[in-house]
Length: 294
Image (cartoon, rainbow, N blue to C red):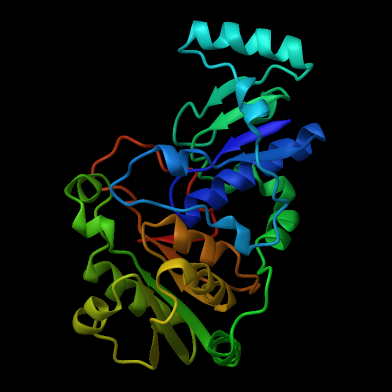
């Protein structure tokens, strides 16, 4: 059994699920999801569990499973975990914390019966099961009429998604200090890049702060603002992004997945070279080699 901890927003949960699914496939075992952190952890930006909108293999870790998890920082808990597992006949679950932000080449040496904690933000963790991940991250239910109409428009144009992430990146000083926001200069450079290489583009603009974007980002080319899927419907924005041919993403796992899930064979993806504002995280394995960093 592989148990993967889910925490953070939709994009983070997708990375965690994909890595867990990949390791579970490697061991030919079950993947279960630990969603208990959403109710236990107080966060500046509270996040709900979001993956139920996709066709994933959704199995949640039980209390019995979690009682069997050993943690390196608690000898007493580990002692009780071993006794509990011996009494119930359940396997002892070891604990594996992501060692660093960049890809861990020893990931597939992690044994079966393990609890994964981390963000695992690299396609290298799940490249070997790419087709399965793409299939599972499709919509479980048909979209509503408005999103169906928008999807039709996107598919009939040379669509370019632009994602502008603000939210807690702006409102929380601590989050801003760590992540920062992509500058307007970045977006103008990216748009120029697209204009010079892509014929007749139509830009579809996604943001958690659409009013700010309309007031501040000047685009002199055909464009549309997508602002009807805020809040709990943000997964529909991600789906619409994935239908676009080309992508200008923010320093956000949300738009990373919107671009990655696109199946357009000649897609052009532009990503920010600087992913974090002030962080020692090594992002060398975050952006796929075929994407362009500026």
